[in-house]
Length: 246
Image 1 (cartoon, rainbow, N blue to C red):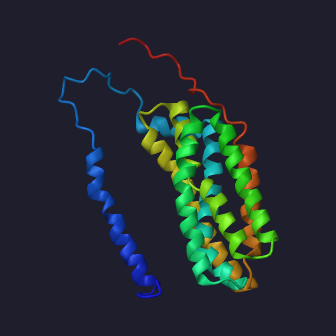
Image 2: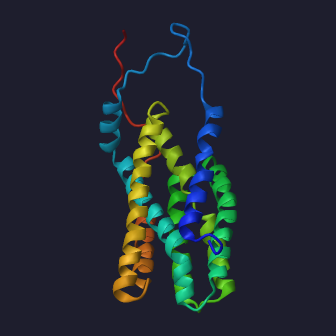
Image 3: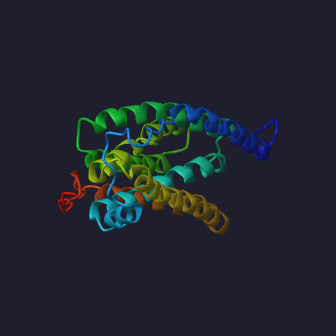
């Protein structure tokens, strides 16, 4: 960014991201020839799966909680460097903090996937959101320093995308894998709406008040609410009427 400017840096980042498309072809599953598949044809349509999911209380709670994840992550990604400069720290500290978040995100995501197979997923999600909220409170309450900022980056990184394994696993537990991509996609849409609002409200709040405090405390509030609303999620397959024999 120092050498090329932030616009060119984003274009370079976008070009690197495009490499995912050809690499993803390695994950493609061959389609079984007609008449050779041993798996019964699915009897539930996409519309039925959609109606079933949004009529299921646990799925709605999961989607609402995922909104908070996007709100917090996008706000921190975009506005944290400017917030640190506003508190007297250098832009280099902002860059290092985002790098620390990325490094610890690897550890947090893998650990979350491992824990998702060994403890109730709703408790794991609730803990993640609560720890995020607590970390933000500590970060904005303590005097700004490189050490406290990097520690915040490490804790935030551990909790960064650690929400994804238990969230996707809960969708699979409740509805199976037939429409997993679609149903998790709608949950992720909520995540992205939260991300959009986190960035937008962060900018508006700073322009009008000269401070990010409002959005930090909104992030704390959303984190606490998500910690609570994930607790009633029922971790079992949705009840479906027995299919009549063909």
